[in-house]
Image (cartoon, rainbow, N blue to C red; front, side):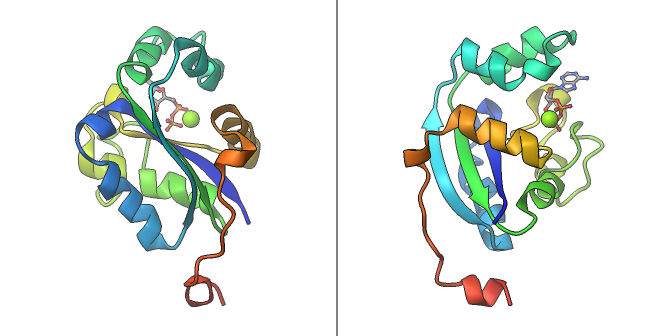
Length: 149
Ligand code: DAT
Ligand code: MG
């Protein structure tokens, strides 16, 4: 089973969207295997967004991600990495389709509510960066035969 790392950013937490966002992934049929509300250190934020370190928006991005608690999650399911990116929507919320999380709740790129890993390699790196092995639950939801044939 594929796994991805999703993070509800500080604006999603402050706007009381944790439940709504988790609901969308649960309703789709994906399985939550890791979940924690946490403040993010500057070091962790910088490591997570390392690929963007030379971009002009980097300082503002780090300030945003460290400005309040985030909800860090690991989700499991067939094709969950690409599917979660579709459920999240385009990076710029005004370009994100209605029906996506960013399309429904966001306006600006600097407050785009949620992060999702973009490929299998980044998913693996990000899960290892944010979670210890023992923080991930191993379980087989009883609905599995009703979601997968
Ligand atoms: P995504 O989060 O859709 O994977 P990304 O990896 O290109 O997008 O960028 C990471 C985050 O950086 C993004 O969610 C918001 C911020 N960001 C990206 N491009 C930006 C820009 N042009 N101006 C301000 N912030 C930006
Ligand atoms: Mg990205």
